[in-house]
Length: 208
Image (cartoon, rainbow, N blue to C red; front, side):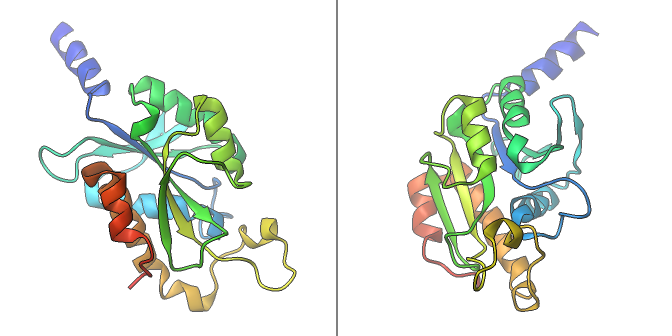
């Protein structure tokens, strides 16, 4: 019994673990909206791991696994709360799994990028994104990695707050699955290759 408990604890604090967070809002009402594109990309990653999301004591749902033998352990996380309260669960997960900020990747929607593009960065401001703002506050640092998934600006005079909570348009839905695969690839590349190499692969590349 003691050996089993120790093994579980050692696995929990594995030094090669990465926390990958997909931002979004909970519930069927929001799951297909632009604001939830980070969680959509996380579903792609979970499929690659052959893992399902299950409740965790930190107020999130997580899926765990490795993309191949010997690869770093990935902890995929979706908060059970709304976007602007993402920080608490992310901070709690980082502490529980002993993952430092530099091994946290947040996948999120980005209004300031065209719909079919990705950008990767480390740290920086939140640009008015409430999820990023709350995570930086809870972690005590903005120095975590981001996969910025472009959703474009709203047309005309539409309020951005209304735009992000609407589903993708018909013309976007055909490209969306490929964009989500690209976002999942980008998150893997950050883990496997580092920021600079991942940026060289994905910056300026439209979804194909």
